Amino acid sequence: MSTVRHDHDVFIELRQVHKQLGWQHILRGIDLKVMRGETLVIIGPSGEGKTVMMKHVIGLMRADSGEVIVDGVHIEKMREREMRPIRAKVSMMFQNAALFDAMTVEENVAFPLVEAGIRDRKEIRERVQEALEVVDLAEHGKKLPVNLSGGMRKRAGIARAIVTRSQCILYDEPTASLDPMVSDVIDQMILRMQKRYHITSLVVTHDMKSMFKIANRIAMLKDGVIRFLGTPEELRASSDPLVHDFIEGRSGVTA
Image (cartoon, rainbow, N blue to C red; front, side, top):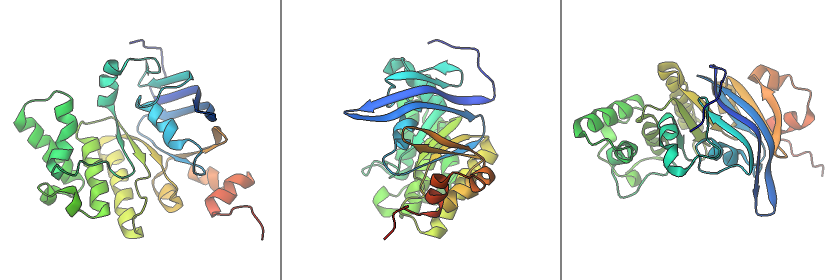
């Protein structure tokens, strides 16, 4: 495992990351820094590689070229077994929460702890209960995922992401398919994680209302590169017509 001198305030850095899937050149030289403790939201048209980029941060995909640095450690060439310390720092909440249907909510939340080799049942029970209380699911731990609403499933996914006491959570479309009120609950959860635990968050979303509510900074991915990077205020003030068309939901196609 190789380390580098690194800016203490930068938790994640991608340098000239390229990735090709089949004949498609998805990432064409991504340069991005995610600061420690910030919520950075990734936006852009569907199929542009937002989730692909995020999976490089947790080692689920490997770059064809370029550098991926997490908390000062280069991970782009690490073997799978070397990734455990990184995944103790960075967890991912997938779009559908990816809960195991045959496990209760408590068992789902406990799963990462068991996988990490923790055998103390009392410690597991206490950490699971703490995580469920944070996401307001303490009374639903015995339920199976099928008996949860969509919003509750998302919150269970957040509990599973924080139970390992990760320093960073990657969210893939956390408010997708949820009604506005439930989406607001998820947004508040993300804000609570940042305030309470100083968690670094990387959020992929198409939900513009959610984006403006939770983002410290926003990165727009287009044509395999970062087209825009700045604060929500800078995004609103951008003179780039493509940026404006995207956030306003305009296709640019005339009848």
